[in-house]
Each structure stands twice: as C-alpha cells, then as structure tokens.
Amino acid sequence: MKIIMLGAPGAGKGTQAIKIAEKYGIPHISTGDIFRANIKNGTELGKKAKEFMDKGALVPDELTCDLVVDRIHQDDCKNGFVLDGFPRTIPQAKALDTALDKDGESIDHAIDIEVPDQNIVKRMGGRRACLNCGATYHIISAPPKTEGICDNCGGKLTIREDDKPQTVQERLSVYHQKTQPLIDYYKKAGILDQVDGTQPLDQVFSMIEEVLD
Ligand code: ADP
Ligand code: AMP
Image (cartoon, rainbow, N blue to C red; front, side, top):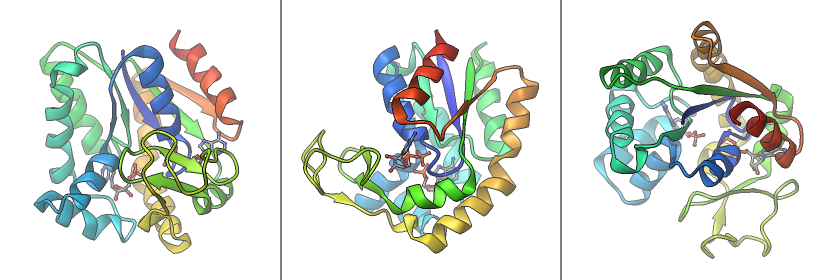
C-alpha cells in the first residue's frame, strides 16, 4: 500500500503515519526527519536544508525529489510506504508520479488531515520532539511517560527550532500557497480521503483505518 499524508504543519501527519506504518508493516518516510537527521550529522544536505527550515520555508524541490525517489526504491518499500511531509508542491507530486509510473505503479491513498489554522498554532506550542528517533509528543494531548524523555528511546525531548510562533505562521502561509493545491491534485486523481484532524488521536486513526481497510 502506497500512502501519502497531507495536511498543514502540525495537523498530525507524523503521529498518524507512525501508527499506519506499524499496523500495515510499511516504512514511515518523513522528509522532515531525513533533513533533521542530516542537520544533526552535519552533512552538506543538512547545512543547505537548515537555511530554509529555520525560516519556515520549503527546502527546494531539487534537494528533495531525488532523495525521496531513491528512498522509495529501497528494498523495505517493496510492499509500499507511508510518505509524511512529501510531496509538498505540485512539482514534487509530479516527480513522484513519474517515478512510480516508470515501474507501472501509483499512489493508492492520499489522506488529508484537516485542522483549522487556529488549532495548529496552539498545537505547535505544545509539540515536543525526540531528535534521536523522531517520535513526537504533545505536553497536553500526548505527553511522554516521563517529562522531557522519549518513551521509545530515552532520548531528550526538545522544542523544534521551527515551532516558534513566528515561524509557525510562516509555515502555515507557505502551506496554503504551495501545498494546499495538492488536495485538488489528488481529488482529481480520485485517491483523496479527508479526515477530521481536530478529533482525539485514536479517533483520527480509526477514521484512517476505515479508509484503508
Ligand atoms: P505534523 O507531522 O503534521 O507536523 P505531528 O504529528 O507532529 O504533526 O503533530 C503536531 C502536534 O500535535 C504534536 O505535538 C502531536 O502530539 C499533536 N497532535 C497530533 N494529532 C493530534 C490530535 N488529533 N489531537 C491533539 N493533538 C494532536
Ligand atoms: P516537517 O517535519 O514535515 O514539519 O518538515 C519540517 C521542514 O522541513 C519544513 O518546514 C520544510 O522546511 C522542510 N521539508 C520537509 N519536507 C519537505 C518537502 N517535501 N519539501 C520541501 N521542504 C520540506
């Protein structure tokens, strides 16, 4: 099963993608996590990506598309994958379609998690992330068992650089301008499903399961 997660920054794409990956036995591929790992490891890609990420801008398509196309051709993607944070622009969606089309394949589901902007701003203030394993928590709606410590790997939880209120506003505006048009793109392709992301985590997952099962 090949799945794309759509939705504003903070809509819950990563949270739900991890659950989908576990249930359906497919890899969770987050471009944001890949860039953050590169930043942590001080790679050239990380240095370039950081400039854009810190401002709340998108990393250019040239640095993003090939990376994803390579990743989905790895062995663990034979039975599918769940893409989180990619595509984020129409050219990225087209690059993905072209790459899959070459192998006679296509995306099965594009799941759009709908959350209004005013909820997003509140959510991002409470997000805590583990830079070690990529797990995400929320101080109120999804707290870790021990404050500040990742349940998964024991890593230290931090506030993401780009979760500061001003950067969140910029990311939302970039989302509306560049990423929201993908909703129509996948609606036209007949593979779009929209779920109400303002519901509690488990209810959002149940709605996604209904779509996928
Ligand atoms: P995205 O990957 O779309 O940027 P995340 O999955 O990181 O979003 O979620 C953003 C924040 O909102 C996190 O702190 C997460 O714990 C929290 N969150 C996710 N889904 C919900 C939900 N349905 N209700 C309340 N909080 C949520
Ligand atoms: P995320 O973890 O999905 O919230 O992504 C964090 C940041 O990484 C974004 O604000 C962008 O700067 C960058 N990023 C992640 N995925 C992409 C993508 N597909 N295209 C461009 N930039 C991306």
